[in-house]
Image (cartoon, rainbow, N blue to C red; front, side, top):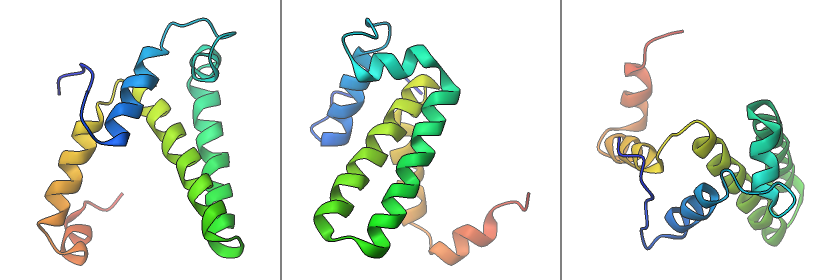
Length: 113
């Protein structure tokens, strides 16, 4: 997968471009750069925290809170993807493949771990 910027019109593509632009930036100037500087362990820890907060918002908070937590979750997921050099287009392609197949069929086709 080409690892160049997505530069698409979708907000997630634009967010990916911004997240990528923070790689190597001064950690004092950017929260994203600070996450990169702290490494993969911190990035994944933050993603886990945001996932838990999104779950809680989904269960007991209003739609506005859920939207905010969902945005935080997507942002931290984008940081993880960028840290691991995963181009979002490979995720979009995987989603495209899965929309062409019944979810139950696709899940059944996965190898058991």
